[in-house]
Image (cartoon, rainbow, N blue to C red; front, side, top):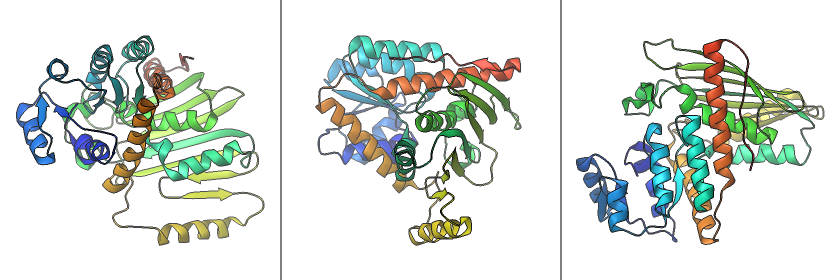
Length: 343
């Protein structure tokens, strides 16, 4: 559902490469666009709406690759039709709609998987393994930075990025950043203090700075913006035993048993030897395809296993709760409680 950039460069190729999947149709509200895309990819059927799709086809699952303001209604409708759903982040553009999607998933016993690609990147998974086995010690502070140029200059083609109904850096980069904190801390936040600004002449925030409280007096820091000259993503995990700097391209451990300069040199050499050009985090289409292939395989396998629920749905709902609290905190200039949810 949706035939924009993320669908045509990553999500559709991921489905086409999966031997257990038959991609039967594309759906897009722009008739000329969907017809052209279907012809180019060799997909025989295409429709202008989800209702037209289900009036004609019997499908097991849908992938939602449309702007955020449409996610909730499409996901709810697809699950009411009996389909499982994999949806690009965020799961909705408001917490109220997110709750509606989550409740539908549980009541209809349909899998709702919301894309959280960073969790599947090898370096982030390795960092999580180090935390779980105790190598980092007690993790007391995590900072996450996600910077990029303006979406319209870098990777996006649609104006919705800068529209109040679903746009803004919090809904674009926030799901990645907040999900990383939750992933590494292993729990959900309690309070947030956020400062959001728009340096460009637009109705949405293009940068956000957040301080987030977690249980056991732990703290997360997030910096995100669309103002950078080049893309940059880095997470720093501070534990009582060591500090880890992790990005899509590198993982550096700093601990008392190693010399920091040698650790840095070792990490740089490893990264240089493995580098393929272009190797930019936001522009490396091949890496995005590979990650989405893994994510798609997980989704398909859950369906094949007869599962009816994905933990991803709860994670995505609590990320959305954090985003909503961040907006409230910034507008009221005060620390705000994060309304998180459990199973």
